[in-house]
Image (cartoon, rainbow, N blue to C red; front, side):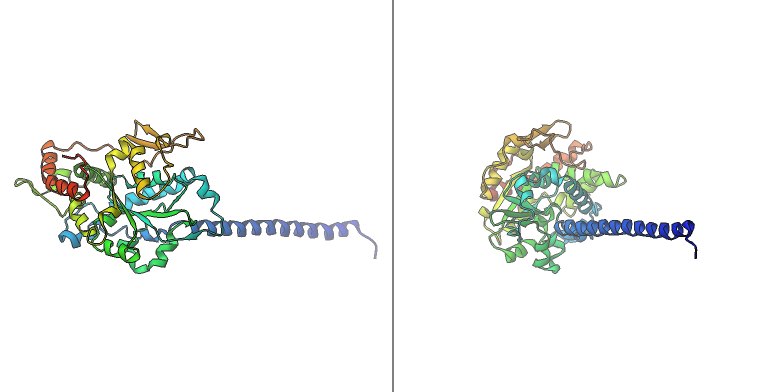
Length: 367
């Protein structure tokens, strides 16, 4: 048979083409496997977002055992707002975490521990700001999302809870924050069962301002909700405050504190002023770091006041970088509320405030 260049080329070219295809396929397969590996590794370090599956639960379910059935019309807002904050936090986490914490990420000596300190409340008091400030400290490791373990996921067990926590070394303190803990009846006993030595932090704020902020948050999601004035009263003509509305109920701080003091001594709770956290963040952070037994690392050099937002932003002084501010859900403009309604609320809260001052040994100056 004669040698045919045409037949030779027809034999060689397809073979070379197939080899090229196989080579490209192997590269793509390798990249795909590597991406899956990276995603699995990343997800294992993130909080389990299944804790957020209660979007259809009414926030008042948490409080019904306290003051009976509620006509709370502001359903889901605790979930929706905290979920938005969690994602803001996750996106900005790399900017906020301390270098020491990041450098120890792959350290085999690090383990996941149950939290030794918890920010237990209160909603719209400044818990997100405090958590962000604390995460600047190299000796703090804190989960960004709200686990809601002691109020919504307790049946999943402590090991499930532990897995939500970030890895930490022996010298680091593990923390979490879930503001609804403070007002949930079952939580104090459950935390005590986990560890009677748990340090508890409560961020409190003028209860009238807090209620308006709570309402403002909800209205941003549900513009058609009733007015603040109509929700405040059971009977507007009689001036009877509706204590089953969660926005009002949460601010009855002394009532909730009584339940915590049945399990924990006052020296195990720190009450942080939400107002001072804005006006003097470094001073309030000094108190928090003392309470947690930490070095005073987070100081005035870490804060930059944002006049547009109305609260401090974080900065890294050694980098002189752009300040990192909280998410867009913070710093909303409050609606104008009837001054007479505001005054009635102030009168309503006065006895609760005074009792709270006596119980905590601190006058927050809300009256």
